[in-house]
Length: 127
Image (cartoon, rainbow, N blue to C red; front, side, top):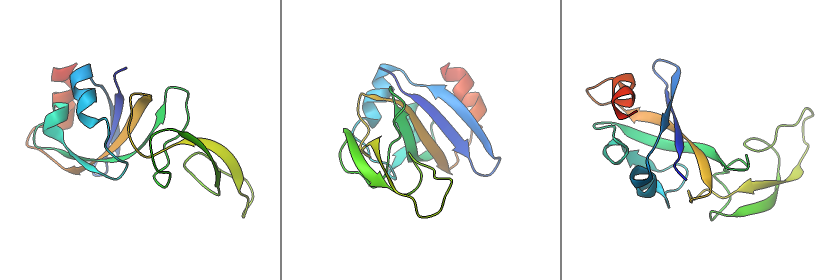
């Protein structure tokens, strides 16, 4: 299943959604949350993107502190995957590990290094 990328640009504060095809999806399967990906493999030449998180097809959040790519029930105190209305609350929740697999549907990324062409133009060409 192809990934939906949500690429945020900290300079402008905008986020762009971008649907990947199967070849580009296979290029980032196996990467970890926190890794920097070359934009060339995603059709965004000159860009460097950092994987910041995402969700799987069931809506479970990816946690950077959980090893592997499968679903696990872990005791967590804060986001991603759990937000408490009271301080000091921990809860056992199902989350997904930090390794990207075929079960992921959305990957969140942040622009670390910009290319020469604006991101909006590259996404429009690819779509």
